[in-house]
Picture (tube, protein in one colour):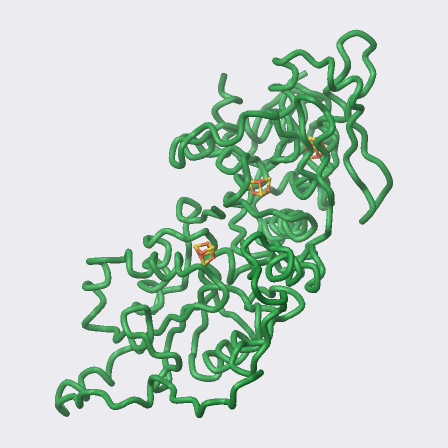
Length: 234
Length: 209
Ligand code: SF4
Ligand code: SF4
Ligand code: SF4
């Protein structure tokens, strides 16, 4: 069903039930996301896509559009709120981009650039987090996990459908865990997919490391904003 | 064991060639700019030098006092703009940073180390005692013909428990991330300030590595 909504003051026509974050991208409005991936079920964990819908702030990946909705994306307070959410993630873990295998193709870093983060307004916590390298093909660099739950939901054992990754405990004690037995029977392309799926440099395929020179890495070739808007035009 | 403390002679108090009054007057009219490194690797300072001929475009407006071009430890007089490389890792860093804060109108964190601690802050996850033990007692390069010891002497700055970003020690006015930031990013900020524009680092010049 065709409906009309107002997006940043502009009236646009769209289909009822489409996720707001996608409708925005289809209309040239970039909304940063860290957990959401177009075409996959929404996780709603990172809140980086927060916008104002009919006066209330909500995560746009969780909102199916409906007739007459008024949506604000580009407002000073909302821009700052999204920036603060990203800054929180940088202060919460340990993000030393210069020594990170994911640098240049990391979604957190790329979104940091888009929201204009220069420094985190929150005190950097420097939590001690032990890395996990027991599995044969994968190691977890826990310093960088943002608990988006992409791996938890979308990486499953091919045979049993069981989860390979889980998040243990809560709050400051939360920790990403791997089922070593299941992980060790992941075929190589599933390992690659899992490393690619992780928006940050937490899930790392062993034996890969830095494979692209600076200047030729994913988001240097094309920014995350361009990629998001381009994908929607296809 | 400790030798008596030598009287300190700061380099800026050493005799220097006197300037002719005309040149001196001209210099003093300009916007004074300084840069110093705290706990960093001097990579950011090199980026400052990498501004190359771009700097020439500003030289009729700015005078660079302390920088890697002039190796003085303290700025001789008040500056309009101070760039800081590196975070705070010892008591001498605190002193230097406070001196810069008192003597600069605008203070800017340059690079990952100044902005959040950077590479040196990797020790923040390890207790200080363990770090010193690893560095001096258990290190493969530790002296073998003398009993292992952690060096301490009044002339050696005292190391802080953690490495701190500059803005957790004094107020910083602007931030240029990167390890090191591109010369273009430093130039953009300097050029904005010198020309009285609002500082605005475009997305294309923001980098964290
Ligand atoms: S995961 Fe991303 S943001 Fe974190 S250190 Fe690596 S590149 Fe930087
Ligand atoms: S390991 Fe990666 S994909 Fe999994 S929750 Fe952490 S950040 Fe998300
Ligand atoms: S930010 Fe990087 S280049 Fe600059 S001082 Fe620190 S380690 Fe060196």
